[in-house]
Image (cartoon, rainbow, N blue to C red; front, side, top):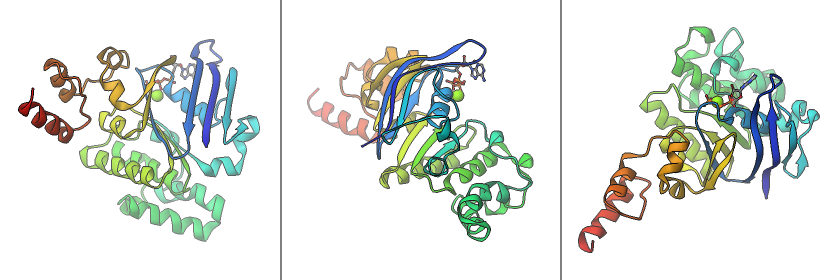
Length: 270
Ligand SMILES: Nc1ncnc2c1ncn2[C@@H]1O[C@H](COP(=O)(O)OP(=O)(O)OP(=O)(O)O)[C@@H](O)[C@H]1O
Ligand SMILES: [Mg+2]
């Protein structure tokens, strides 16, 4: 079952610039899909189109079999089903306290008492319950990011559109977000994630490289076996992958563990 279908989607900002041209894409239910590309490639624009915050200038977006229209923008069912984590947490935090921000959606959906209960529970899950009564503006970058993640997860969406969820986070919190996404993957939620984070890309079932257009669609392993594409996406080539290219090995490892296994075999019969 397809969650999203993008058919020849193009988008031009009112300033006249084409951010995206002729995008064809499919996202199936339960898939984790990474979208990568250089700065200004149109990745955020693409997620905004999928979240019905922008309407395509040309082409069509189908969500669960139905065309996305202006009405979708304010459709409660759609808003609950699809959670959008903005690239900048400041866009998502506008109340006097973190708790109010996180409770905003849930209170709307489930009423005040239940909404607040769920919001507190979400803060606890993210280990930021101590931030509940803080003013969002007084938070650090990483704390803001976690608070904005709580705003999304407290709505219990089925589809998650994540714009650079691990940016601004330290190692521990990056690991935390990675684990969270792994959990959603295991629960068969649909995840579309824009990222430059190699560890996140490795977690994806499929990757799209975008730069105004779709340059590549395939598995992370296929992407990492094509250095010229990684360069065009302005991604770092993982050290392990570089080493394997230097050694002239054809197999591409996605983790240090996999690399060790391949090298052990290679040592026996190079
Ligand atoms: N509100 C806007 N009005 C006019 N042009 C815009 C607007 N937002 C983005 N653009 C332009 O559209 C193009 C794509 O921007 P977008 O934010 O989608 O890129 P991105 O891939 O998310 O980049 P980044 O990696 O820097 O976040 C850029 O050239 C950008 O300058
Ligand atoms: Mg962006």
